[in-house]
Length: 141
Image (spheres, helix red, strand yellow):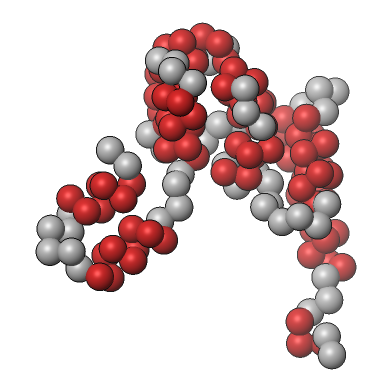
C-alpha cells in the first residue's frame, strides 16, 4: 500500500487538507528501498543476501525502524544496481543540492580507506566550514 493510499484510508470523506498532505508526504528511505526491491523483482531475503545484511535488519530498514550506515546503503545500492548517491540523499546523509557539495560528500562516503567514524567526522568538518563561509542572506545586496 503506498503512502498516498494509506492516507486515503484514513480520509474517507476526501478532505482537501488531508489530500494535500498526502501529496506533500515524502517517500521515506524504507519506502523507496521497498519500491526499488520490488521493481528489481527481489524478495526481502534475496536482497538481504545480495547486500550482505540480515533479513530482519533489512526488514527494519524498510519499515523505518533502523537507519543504515553509509556502508550498508552502498551495499544495498550495489545489489539493487542503483546509484548510491540516490540512497545517501534519501537517507539524509547527502544534501540534494547541485553545488558540487554532494560530490565532495560522496567522495568521503565512498573512500574505502576511511572508517565509518572518520567519514562522519570529515563530513561534519566539511559542513561546518561550508556553514561558516556562507554569506548571510540579509547581507546580500
